[in-house]
Length: 618
Image 1 (cartoon, rainbow, N blue to C red):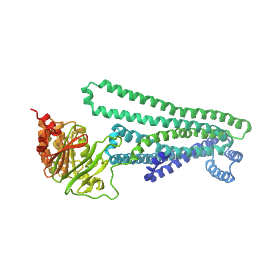
Image 2: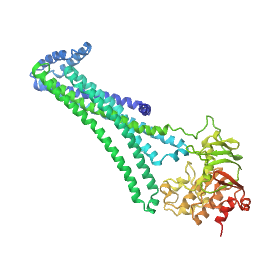
Image 3: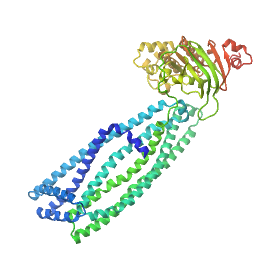
Image 4: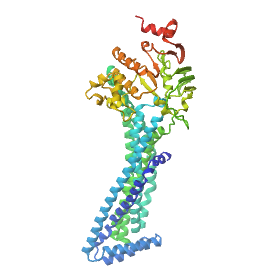
C-alpha cells in the first residue's frame, strides 16, 4: 500500500484535471442510470392501457417494495417519480412515446459527452504524472555515483524507465476510473434495483463475499508473478543492449548461435511467466461472470414468481430491475480486475522507487564552496581507496602534489590503480580515507558542478552521441559561435577530415560515433575538451588504441591542449610522456617510483626502466 500511495503522490500536481474527470465520471454514471430507468415508462407506455392506472399501480408498488428504506428517501423518490411521470405521461400515448424517446436521446448524448471528457482528463493526468515519475528517475540516475553503474546492468535500468513506468501508468486509470466510475455505476444501478424490489436486490448480493475472496487471492498471485516478469524483461533488455553494442565481437567469434540460445532462453522464460499471469488474470473474469449468471438465473426465477403469483411487481418493473441488476455485472467484473492491476503496477513501481530511494554517496555538503578558478595546486594526501563491495585496496597511501601548469604522468601495469586515481579528482569516486586538496580546499567541500567545470577529460573509450559533429564538439555548451568550434577542431587536427564528411560539421556520426574511425573519434573528443577550455586536463590512455598515424595526429592535438594547463596523463606508450614534469609509477595501488623521465630511466632495476626497455628494445 505504501508503494501505491507513493504513485499517487505524482498525481497531486494535476488535481484540477483529476477533479474534472471525477465530476464527468459522476455525471456519466447518473446519466447511465437514467438511460436504463427510462425503459420502465417506455414499456408501460407501449404495453399498458392507460397512463393513469400505471401511475397509481407504480406508486402503491413502490410504497410496498421500498418500505425498508428510510421515510425521507421514500418521500424524495415519490416526489421525483411524480414529477417525472407527470412529464412523461402527460398527453396521449404518442406524446408520451415522443417524450420518452427525446429523454433517451438526450441522456445517451450527454452520457457519451461526459464519458469522452472523463477519459480525456484522466488520460492527461496519468500520462503527465508518469512523465514526471520517469523524469525524476532519470534525473536521479545522474546524481548516483559511478559505483552504482558498475553494479547495475544498463538494460535493467533502461527497462525500469520504460517498461516499468508503462506498467505503473495503468494503475492510475484503475484507481481514478474504475474505483470511482464503477462504484458509482454500482451505486446508481443498485439504487434503481432497491427502489424496484429490495427482496430481489438482497438475493443478488449473496455472491459478493465469494467474489471478493477470489479477487484477493488472484491479486496476490499476480503481484508475485509481475515482479518476476519485470525482472525477466530487464534481463532481455540487457542482452539486447549488450549484443547490439558488441555485434562486431559476436560476428568475429561466430557466436551468433550462442547468443541466439541465450536470448531465447530468456524469452522462453518470459513466455512461461506471461502465460501463468494470463491464466490467472483471465480466470478472474469468467469466474466472476459465472457466479453472477448463477445469481441472475435465481433472480429471474424468483422475480418471475413475484410477477406471476404474488403480483408484487409489474412486468415492466421486473424487466427494469433485470436491466439494472445486469448492468451491475460489468462494473463488478471491472472492479474484480482493479486489484490485480494495482498489484501488478505496484510490483513495477517497487523497481522504479528502488532507483529513487538509492541515495547518492557523491553529493554536495550543505554549503559547498563556490570555486570559479584553479589558482595553485592539487594535492593527494594519504589517499586510500577500495570499492564498497570489496576489501581489496585499489589505492594504498597515495600522496603527491601538482602545481598549476605542471604535467604529471602515471605509468604502471594494468590494474595498478591509474584510472581509479584520476577518477578521484573530479569526484567520480571519493577516497575511502585521506583527502584530495584543490588550492588547499578539500574537494568534498567544493560544489561538484564547479569542480567538474574546471576539468576536461579525454579517455581511451571515447563516447560520442548520435548527433552532428558540431553538436558533439559543443556538448554541454550553448550558443557557441561556429568559428570557435572550427578553431577547436583545427587545433585537434580534426578539421580536415570533418570537411571531407558529406555534410561537414552538420554530419550525424551515428550512435557512439560508429560512422568514423577511432582516431577521428578521439580527435573530436579533444576538440570537445578544447572548446570547454578547462584549466585541468585528464588524459586516460587517450592514444593507446590508435594506429601510428592516428596516434601522431592525436598526440599533436594533446600537446597543444596541454599548453598552460595542469595535466594528468595516464600513458601506455612512454613516448607520449617524455616531456612530463614528473612521472609516477604505480604498481598494485602503490607509488613505487616518482621523478622525471631522465631520473627514472637511470634506475636499471626500476619498473619504469623495464617498461621502457620492453617498448624500445629495438
